[in-house]
Amino acid sequence: RRAHLRLCLEKLKRQVPLGPKDSRHTTLSLLKKAKLYIKKLEDDDRKAMHQIEQLQREQRHLKRRLAKLGMERIRMDSIGSTVSSERSDWDRGGSRSSGWRG
Image (tube, rainbow, N blue to C red):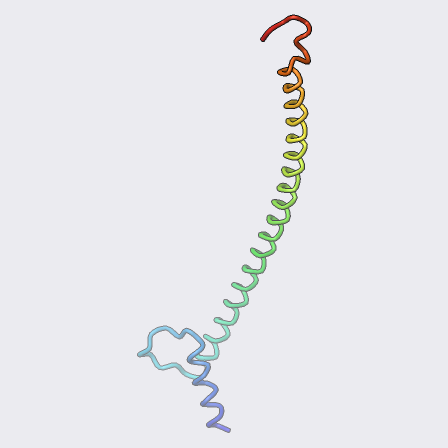
């Protein structure tokens, strides 16, 4: 049983940053450092999840904006092609009958 406990503590030492290698760590200090390290990892995880949520919200916002701009572009292209065809009519003499030359 003690050998198993010692093995588990050795595995824990490899997982937890302990600081200077030359200092000897008691079981209690190792467990305290492991507890602090776990709390730090949980805090980092919480922050990362919050950042992911923020980025997802921003992504949804940007996708909506992109879709809106795409619709506006289609509308502007449509207006542009109407204006362009009216200009073509004018260039072909459709509006030249008034005698004015441009």
